[in-house]
Image (cartoon, rainbow, N blue to C red):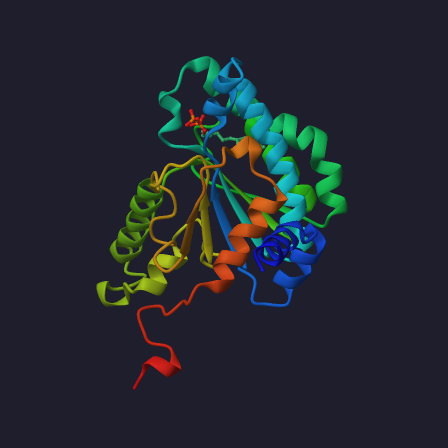
Length: 264
Ligand code: FPP
């Protein structure tokens, strides 16, 4: 009896990734997954490597997870690559992080094009170095017509900054008599955010054991399911993403209401 239980458990763990993927695809998938990619520094420290080695390894995970998310059938993947607060890091680390999009897109853009991925970016573009912008704009331009996965990089992104900018634009529209105060609704706010062309995330993942939002998509995450894992971002792999999706699929999303059987 005990052996039978162990065998059953082993079998469950050993179900091949493809089979788990196919099972997940039979159920409702999260359309938009947002990820706070954390733990690059600790990954490097554990190996006595400089922090930037962790970011470089993290870049490879971006490649792996983008391909897999696209294969699974996720519509949008938003990745928190650089926050408005990350400028406080040592200049050498900031410079390295600003070079990563160039390296990533320089190496993988042909693959992304082949995979029908559309590259986008949200954040305050102005402060980014020219070389960073050039690489991202080129990728956005060359993938604009693709209709597979949307790979949305949050670069120099901060949610409070995004909300402040949205409020300023709405105030200007009122000043210019284009709209009135009564026109301010949740929909209007949503249309003034950097995500105006995207659905709200269904699933938020944060790696590395930290359990906070760090100024990420505060408006958009209002009804999102959260999943936190201790895995460091460079170690995050296809099986981890599937685990997050499987857990998401077991959740009961109520959006503040009740499900049919709970009404009575
Ligand atoms: C947080 O880990 C991670 C970042 C601030 C950078 C994330 C960037 C990548 C994963 C690469 C992005 C790739 C492209 C293509 C843009 P941390 O440094 O805070 O880790 P720690 O908490 O362990 O120190």
